[in-house]
Length: 120
Image (cartoon, rainbow, N blue to C red; front, side):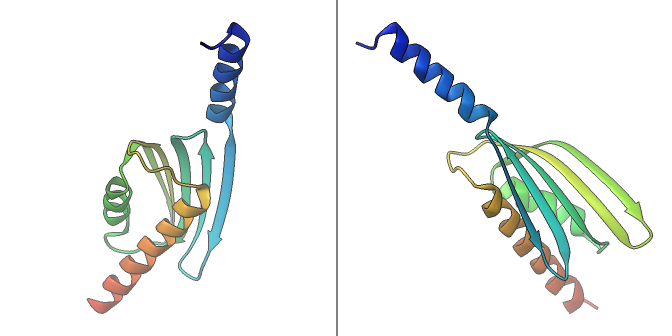
């Protein structure tokens, strides 16, 4: 049976894990992606890129495929440039690093780019 001190340590460690912050950046010719992972299940994702038809809806669909529950989305545009900001909660059993998420977003944007250009 765990002692009171052991239980307190376990609770403190769990609280510390929830407060941990991890960041990653991924830059390509398509977009600059920044991810900040807070604890185990909250991520803030920022994407700065050129506007493309279907980009927002396809990005949202891809995030939902990863079992992310989108809590908030902000879109800021200036001419042909767009900044998407997403706050998401990781709902699935799989745990991602900030780098995993940034790379996945880049892959998604590449897929959108290829399919947008193929239709032109």
